[in-house]
Image (tube, rainbow, N blue to C red):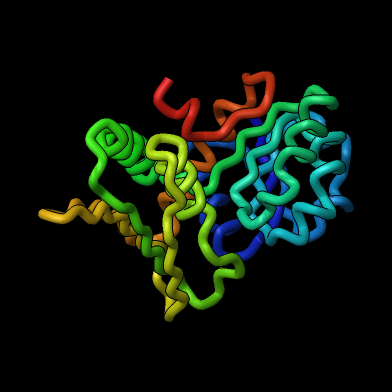
Length: 222
């Protein structure tokens, strides 16, 4: 397979490194993906780590021109249904995630297990604290929203989310379940952003042979 990187900032460079680790050809890098050569795009998987505004401007081009697309950008939840429907209408495979870290996707599964048990017993109230670097544009994080969505689906309650933006924190997510007699706290901490890049490359490898649109957490353990 071939891969193209959309957005060549810190994450884009880490994706390029992760591609090299897997022996996957990087067929191009672009800060303005709509100017990319359609002939190369048609045989490549695009890995997008840009900004929410860029997704709004570019998703149609991505769906129309690339073999498959991996979207690691967050902050476009309000148009998610439109994006998914457009990719489906074009017959272009897409894998998206609020977080491509393998560890975070295990964290999602653990939270799903615990919140389902909480729903059976009652007596606990959930909360989420997420911490990221000061350059992150969206708050709460997409990962925190995904965690809250899991809890709401399992327990039927809204979850309070507190966001911290400070320094160069790669990403910390804390989920607590507060009861009258005890507290359960789950924590995931990313040491660097390289885990996000490696997960996105794994998603690209899978997207190269997939049909349809998938959330990464629904396919990573299959």
